[in-house]
Amino acid sequence: MRFPPNRRVLACLLWAIFTASLVAGEEPELVFSLRTWDGEYHSKDIPGGVETTPSVGAIYRIKADGTGLTKVAQPGKDANAPAFSPDGKWVYFQSNVSGHSQIYRCRPDGSEVVNITQGERLGKSWQEAYGFALSTGGGQLLYTVHDGSTGRVALADPDGQNPRMLFPDLGYTYMGALSPKGDQIVLSGPARGYRLLIADLQGGKPRELTPDHPGSFAPQFTPDGRTIVFIRRDGDVYRVDADGKDVRRLTEGNRYVEFRLSEKDHHGSTDGPHVSPDGERIAYVSRQEGTPNLYVMNLDGSGQKQVTTRKTPCGRVRWSPEGKQLAFVSFEGKYPQLFVVDAAGGEPRKLTDLPGGVHFVNWKP
Image (cartoon, rainbow, N blue to C red; front, side):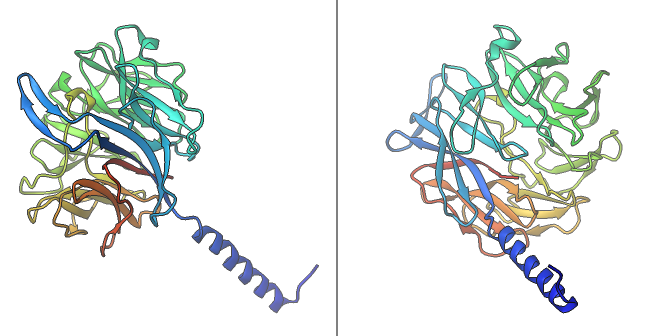
């Protein structure tokens, strides 16, 4: 059927409105881990360590408007650090089922839960696997393996098959990140005093990216692969070109950007700055005004702006896929809960009110 010109224009307009409404109706989704305790939480120093209340971790999904809370998986007692695959068809996470941490994946509805690392694939001594990262296209899985005393970085297919140890002679390394093209890796670790190392995955030896800057952590490539953002032990955010040039400090004053190593140092970074999807901004957490709150700045360090003004500490900041919102956790009562706020500022929206603590959060692509 052929429409007159004015009707064709009207038809196109109606179709545009219809398709836009469909897109608008697709509420963004997040995945997070929830930790609950057996009774009242307590923590006290004991000879040789710290005693805490036994806890259980599980993986959940929720929509950005706070609806659709769904438990995804809970293999073992410590399911945590979830992330969607780039195509949104899988949820990856780590958990401890048989006494050692391993990496699992399942469908977003909780089906097809599979341990995909099974440390012995790289030899019986490598008992644990954690600290994973997926390549931008989802075709590679990067993770850390540990034998009880030292760690190495391994690379495998997204289903865990064909694992191989990267740079086995390098020494204790972890905190790896893949470049957007999947052809380079940047990593850190005790082997070189926590200096950042970069290497081509198709050959070549790792080279020091920050030789004059030990104590560098949580590296992350920008989407164009040209720049790496990281933090140092002095608490500030830095950037460096992927060729090692132009190391630049972006925040000043030793203001404690929110970053921690986990309870076991070999687990690597658990928090840090996050680069926006367009590569133009960095979200981070700082205690410039006392309480750790969310901030955003341009990639060159200019335009630093405080986004939240909460009276309880914030952390785990993550950009939404379209770069307009920030997800984060902050204490509300006894436990940290999940919040979302517009990147431009405004009142944060609390998504959860759960009898436990939200710890790790990521958006669905």
